[in-house]
Amino acid sequence: MTYNASDIEVLEGLEGVRRRPGMYIGGTDKRALHHLVTELLDNATDEVVAGHADRITLILERGGSVSVQDNGRGIPVDPLPRYPDKSALEVILTKLHAGGKFHNKAYATAGGLNGVGISVVNALSLWTEVQVDRDGFSWQQRFSRGKPEGGLRQLEPTRKRGTKVTFMPDAEIFPEIRFQIENLVEMCRSKAYLNKGVKIRLKAEDTDVSHEFHYPNGLEDFVASWVEKQEKIIPEFFVGQAEGVGADENIRLEWAISWTFDDKGRQLSYCNTIPTGQGGTHETGMKSALLKGVREFAEARNLLPKGITIVSDDVLDGMFGVLSIFIPSPSFSGQTKEKITNTGIARPIEGAIKDQLDHWLHGQPEQASKLVETIVERAKERQNRRKTASSIKRKSVTNRLTLPGKLTDCITSDPDLSELFIVEGDSAGGSAKQARDRHTQAVLPLRGKILNVEQANMDKFEKNTEVQNLVTAIGAGCGKQFDLSGLRYGSVIIMTDADVDGAHIASLLLTFFYRFMPDLIRNGHLYLAQPPLFRVNSGSSSSYALDEEEKQKIIKKIRSKRPNAKIDISRFKGLGEMVPSQLRETTMNTQTRRLLKVFVDDEEITHDTFDRLMGKRPIERFKFIQEKASFAQDNLDI
Ligand code: 1YM
Image (cartoon, rainbow, N blue to C red; front, side, top):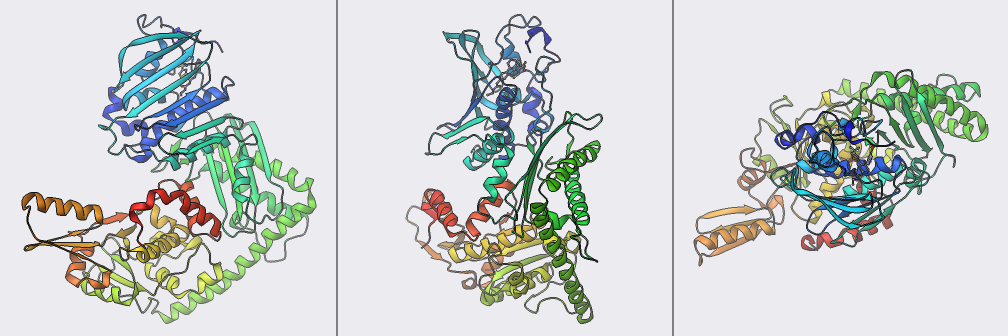
């Protein structure tokens, strides 16, 4: 399409963006900060998808700035009739909604920003530099907090084409400016998978990190990388795409699925390349297509024994799949805008996938039978398990006394007021019992290290007493049966020693909660207690320090007031070493303690981290530790 500078539409200044960044990028936290990069990456990706570019380079620069470059047409630089003294580039960078008619984006991206992204990035940056190669020259313009610093400068002649945007986020807006390479890697990787053929390079100047992402087979490559080490039920992937689906919604979709013997599957979905971690109507459509297709095939081939019914979970357990849809006007909802709620799309998506699934299954009946038989097996196992579970439930109703003996419960039964402290060992349990507020704080001591749920099978897991105690005390069930309405404590607090053993126990517990009660985390009920490592005494005053850094700060403060003061430092080896009043004051008392709330920042990265660090493959663990070792130097406690 030829661009016509006179086509620019409604324009608005950027003051509003700086005043209310939340409206445009959903906040000013780490997630929002990374969103700035997404915006530029989206712009560059659009240029690739439109067929004008084939390469994107993202550089995390030494001083903390980020640059994104593509080899597309270059942002237009000629003046606009409506603003004769301004270039199109300046208008695009300094006005909101400068997308206009000529920026013919068929699909709204990034929560509906629709091409205004680049001006939002500019508004929220201390400085931005744009370099465009276009119309035979290099051009450059710099901006400061969204305002031009001088006009567009014409530099040397060039035959190249492309756009490079470099920006430094503004510390007035973002409380913490530190890009995480893992997040950027994940971002680039999924963009490359979702737009097959795109080549994306990522470099971090101050480390040796350098990646090149290029997936000619798109989603299929994505799923293949997950199941590489898994035992697959059949080697074939169910891969497909459909276009122009639906009556009034012009839907395009793509998917790739592989079924494995694993008992945990993994499904991701995207809408207009934005991750939809909370699912929505597009996922509903896909799941229902898979269930119906498998059920019909099982019936047609007589694979279903009497009394057995396949449900969605039987198909989804062990299933690794990605669904990517494109729709013109997505409605993102939910707290984190990760859910799609367009109502008209479930049916057409279901139809498109079901047609191709039927074709795929019947086209290779032997393989398909193998797959469906395994799914039927899962249904059988599940129905058997339910029988056992309901008999246990009946037993416990007659017993009435269902709470674990080790639990020291609190007086109140109001979950909004109550807290459960999970501690390691009976000795710490004893101190915690004495230090607690008996009205609102319950204590559950666990014996030694709990089972690593990443490595244990379901059977071993269900029989483990420590795990059972934990589940019963919390009261909301676990796994697929988890139900937040049963929660007995509004805050579940992991309280372990401030040493390596304590950290190990905490990570085992985190793994457990992440895998079996993720909603406890998502809804903000899980915390880590912060017991101090040191006590610093000087004269009659004593303070506590969480770590070495804090200890040094306290010492410095004392020295600045009294250079010759005698300072006495003691190190706590464990919670059990503290007297109850110390434990109360530093770690348990709601008025004086510090707590860390556990939350999942990026589901994808978290999943991978747990899988690598706690999973069954020692090699992966070793590689992970090697990769991260340089960050850990100061904290090793051997
Ligand atoms: C690193 C970020 O923004 N590249 C980019 C942006 C545009 C174009 C090319 C472009 C689009 C069109 C015509 C068109 C943009 N253009 C506009 C606007 N990389 C990056 N590359 N010519 C060039 O869509 O018709 C906004 S962004 F508004 F001019 F269309």
